[in-house]
Image 1: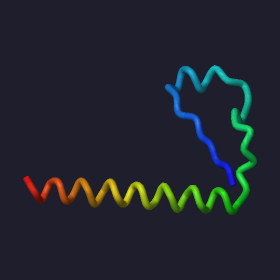
Image 2: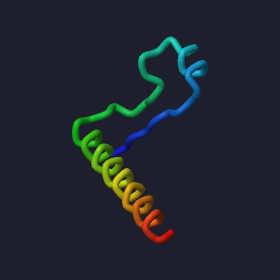
Image 3: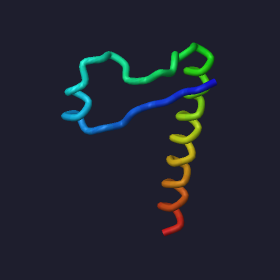
Image 4: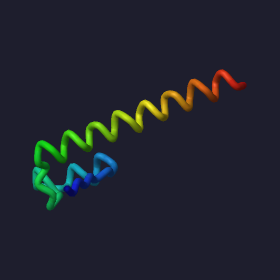
Length: 56
């Protein structure tokens, strides 16, 4: 399963005519796995921020 993404400033992304600039298909299973990873990472960041605030 492959997943990819592109992050760029708006002026860069807006100059592209295509709806998608990826060669990855975005199957439902791959998208679910990607969302689960993002959810985990965001939760980890949130917990780390709270722990850092409590320690100071």
